[in-house]
Amino acid sequence: MKLVLKHISRISGIFVLSFGILVVLVGLWLWFSLPPISTLKAEYPHLVVVENDGFPRVIFKKLKPLTWVHVSEVSKPAIGAIIVSEDWAFYQHPGYDLNQIQDALEESLKRRHLVRGASTITQQVLLKSNK
Image (cartoon, rainbow, N blue to C red):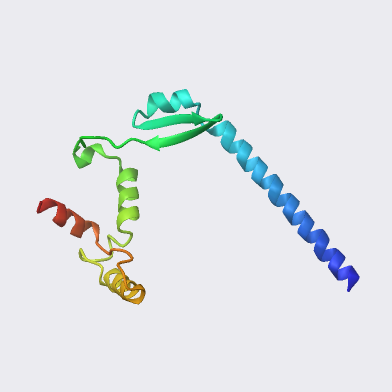
């Protein structure tokens, strides 16, 4: 029994050490791969970079007024990212997602308050275009 406990203790120690080394390596990789703050300020004027105790904090400024652009001016990866983040089943439903509506309704009824919405991109566009 002592031998088994000693073996488990050794394995857990190796695991903790390996995890610590991995965290340090990822931290170093991030530290050296991120651009300098001056580059961030120059390339991304909608970001506010504040240094506090030597650690940068990035704050997104809300751009006002919004500038509408034609869809042809937006890159395909950006369009894909918007679709995935707003309505992951966009290509699988006819403009409304009954499964998501049912799930949101059931979850809200279960918790007795509105937990989340279930609108699709199509529903959001219709809502905005009627204002």
